[in-house]
Image (cartoon, rainbow, N blue to C red):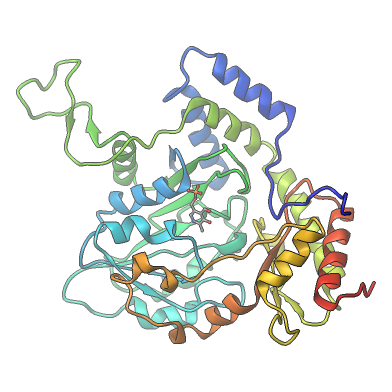
Length: 394
Ligand SMILES: Cc1ncc(COP(=O)(O)O)c(C=O)c1O
């Protein structure tokens, strides 16, 4: 019977300093909308070189707020890659925008050589809302993207849910918004740092900053100039429908504590990636993503391509086999064009996306998180070979 501890595909890293920070925040008089959230916003901005940051209760609401802040609506078209989580587009599609997907490159990111055909299509109405998703932490080259855009009303909202701590090819940090209107981060449990749940939008635009704060706060304008009671200290107005998207003080305290270890997490994960690369290099039927971007990338996932079909296997069978050996695994992502909820917004077909279809057939995410050890990597590699070939080749 298997007795080894189960190794999940992802896991948070919580230390006593995190617990102390959360405990202190919980003992404070103010447990939401206070100084911890403001300090967290400031510290993230310092880290990513952005002027403004607005914290949200999770990355999905932060993305929805970014679409709303940019007034995305009917006639606009969101352009992104199909290899992403639904939150990358949900807020914009809910607001009535249509969706165009562009196939992926060898990192699983939007293929910029194909994007050129989509991005500047003249339309009588509506704007292009480009959502580059930095998948698994690998940054899309935004200077290259910027060179492709010549319609002045184009909006760029980066989905950097996976990529806090990564840099673009020019060495600037993801989140700095040098070539985008807004960047969205996630602090979900298994992301590069965590608040339990949490998100943030960074921007350098003061007007977007003000709008994001209002959208986070149910659309409330606290200092309205119109209305019979304008000026009264208790008076407020809602001039735009939204929701309560606030982050709590104890979430922010955890985020601040985690942010101090961002570089440690990066280094630990860089060394795990290097080990995986070495140990999997000669494994038949397994290929790894290109390593050129490794020094710039704070990896969130470790994905490999496996020739399931050629081996007479399926992804489900391999995942079951790994699970029986106490190894977790996952697949990222079911292509956007497969989701029934997007059928009305997206008219493209799977055959329009040969690279995504290849990824969908072959990719598997193996255990990858900062508290893993070299021995864990060995265990995963040995188990994977056992499952793929029914015999250990090492
Ligand atoms: C690419 C991507 N975008 C957005 C999100 C949404 O973030 P959150 O889980 O914080 O809502 C996720 C979460 O998994 C994601 O993977």
